[in-house]
Amino acid sequence: MRLILVGPPGAGKGTQAKRLVEHLGVPHISTGDMLRAAVKAGTELGKKADELMKSGQLVPDDIVIGMVRERIVEPDAQKGFMLDGFPRTRPQAEALDTALQAADVALDAVILIDVADEAIEKRITGRRCAPADGTIYHVEYDPPPPGVEVIIRADDRPEAVKERLTKYHRDTKPIIPFYESKGLLKRVDGLASPDDVTKRMLAALGI
Picture 1: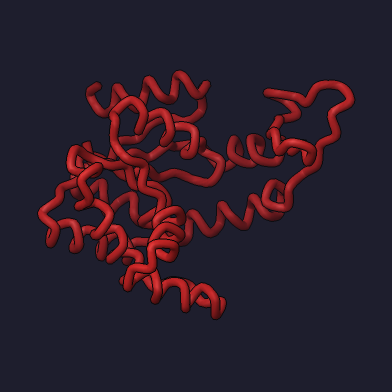
Picture 2 (picture 1 turned 120 degrees about the vertical axis):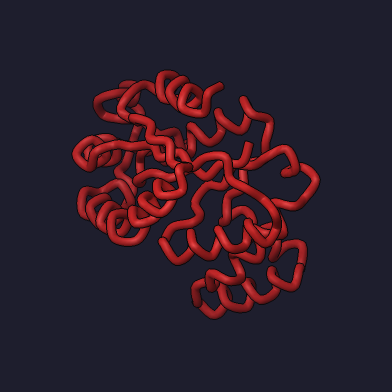
């Protein structure tokens, strides 16, 4: 099964991606991991990306698309894959669509983990991190044990969360109607326990 996982920041994509790839037995393709792997391997695209990143520039879409295209034809991705963190914009979605067609690869579904902004803000701003071991707690859902020192990470502060949500609505949300028009979009309510969200995702995929 070939999937793309999308959703707002704090929707639980990381947790659900891990569960889905284990259930389906397909590789989890993260563009961040892929970039690092290409740089480490010294591929042509990796060298170009490394030069750009070292000079503080963003890696252009065409290089990322090229890496995705190389990755999805590797042996472990023949039975399927889950693409996470890409595409992030409508132009990226359109370019990816063209690349997939050229590689004769068809997507089976695009899963949207849907969570309202208010719930996202409550979920993220309630997070606390224990500097000692990196454990993440939540003031309401999973409070830290007595005596455990915790901090609020910069990304979890209210102003940062609002900025991330604004960026999601501006840049990433336009990919939703693109995939909806292709009949690929599966909406899953992400406002539930991780186990329930996993069940909903599998049901949406007909598994």
